[in-house]
Length: 153
Image (cartoon, rainbow, N blue to C red; front, side):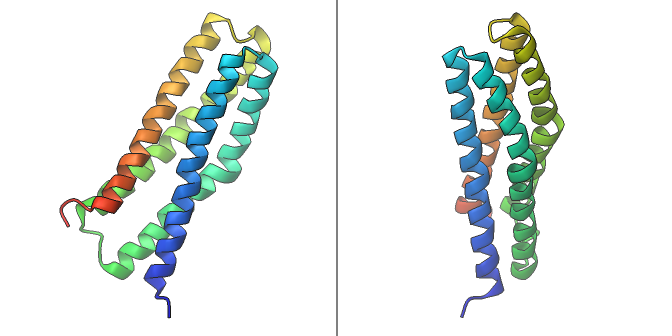
């Protein structure tokens, strides 16, 4: 029989796979659209990524968080340093997504529609967003490493 902890662990890992894997795929698609030079394709992708942020990435981050809290409660793991690091990583990533990437993505979409891909402000904001997205991915990968390696445990 499966324990509640094991079920939560599965939910936690499955949601993390979706969140991180989806983010990496989106980064690849955006880079491909930037390289294509097609402003319409980029604007459409930015619009879809905004919808994905609200309908997929945000819910996945909540599922990861709630399942993690459930496992920490059941396993008595709140004091473990790797658990604290995991919670911090989730909050930082969610903050970057909601507080920076979502609003800046809308701004970038409008700029692309107005000026095309070669405008200096489009390039500057696009480069900045790609950097923040890559940093966000590294943060999430470090959280995964902490969950697997469990330093201090």
